[in-house]
Image 1 (cartoon, rainbow, N blue to C red):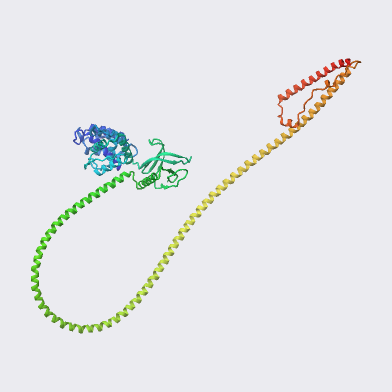
Image 2: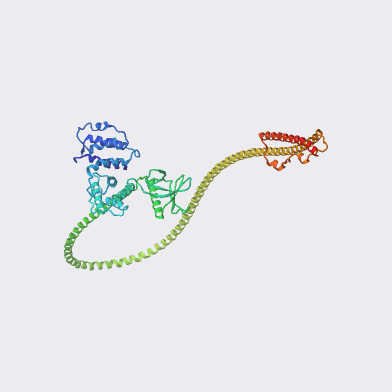
Length: 607
């Protein structure tokens, strides 16, 4: 209903702007264009022939606002769905149509077209639903105070007439801003902030520090609070939304103590998450907490705008002031009437006094006559008094007898009352005992129900624990099997390592034995070569014997066992090369031996 009234205000300005002759009527061709634009910005399907069918009984002449309202309600406003269109686009369309005709600022213009449109929207928001739309001076002063609270300069208009139109209001604002030297940028920032707060339902916005849910780091975010939601963005342009916190009945706000190097902290708790937030100072924290509590209250009450509620309160206050003013006027009128009646009563009182004086004279005469009659009556009464005294004595005797009977009856009544009190107290005790018994029974029933619920929860918890224990046993068995497999593989690897080490020691021993045999074989070969040379060349007289030093083979270095163990086993190519070297060395030895054989005769001859 509020959205429909707001749209109707903007469309009323667009309709009246098309009435160039101020006759209260608009041509059907212009209404077609207006209707098509409204269908476009409101995101509803457009039926071009609906307007022709609706006004089929009319001629081609203009249509009044009363004639256009049924079509507007049936084909446009009844089809509007909140959330499917942008309200600012509708306002911009209607402002574009009506500002060309009505808004003509003078040379000292301070407001931009965008600022003027926002003030026009604020004016429509605060105006009552009575056409033509006007603003009472109290609402206009309230709007100017809101704008001045954001600026360093106060905007105040000298005189605001009752029934102020929006165009007069814009001219007054331009004149006030120009007279106080306000620049366009300052007033633009102030108008935008008030527009976002009142029309955009922005309760509060600003930078706050928020703690992450996953990374747990603190990040500065731009927060925007509206009734029912708290959004936060990366910057003031509100383009990159990082998240929205729903403000519902399951949400609450609490103050936190300082920690993690942050101060002035508070948190917003929902059903699923807790959002930790840090404000710049304690005043900002209190303002945010108050604003969030206001948002929660509006959400619980089903309201979507704080300023709608404030506007209703101000309207009620104005109506209350009007009623009081009317009551005071009525009381003044009644006082004047009472004063006239009082003057009339005073005149009547003078007449009554005169009549009273005359009545006193007549009363004196009547008094004298009554005195004589009274004296006669007094004598008669004395006789009657004596008779009455005698009757009184008789009555006193009867009264004494009756008093005795009454005293006896009172004692009986008192005994009955005491008995009644005791019976009533016994009955109250019995009632209290029954109430206590019923209370105990109710408590026992509730405790039994709670115990039964706890037993059920304990059984469910026990089943969960048994399932977790079974799962833990299965995981433990799998881990044991895996450890057994790894231990078996480790034992096998250790056995293979032991086998390799044993085979290596045997190979080292075989190498040492082979080297020893090789030395022995080379020694025996050298010895037999010497013997063979001696046998093949007999010693003649005069030959010198070959030196034993020349017959010795070159020394062979035998590697130690530690060097053999530390040295890596030779590769096949290396072994092949070593075998070739050994063959070459044996060949060399044979050549040395042959040389020695050749040299021995010469030595013998030298001897």
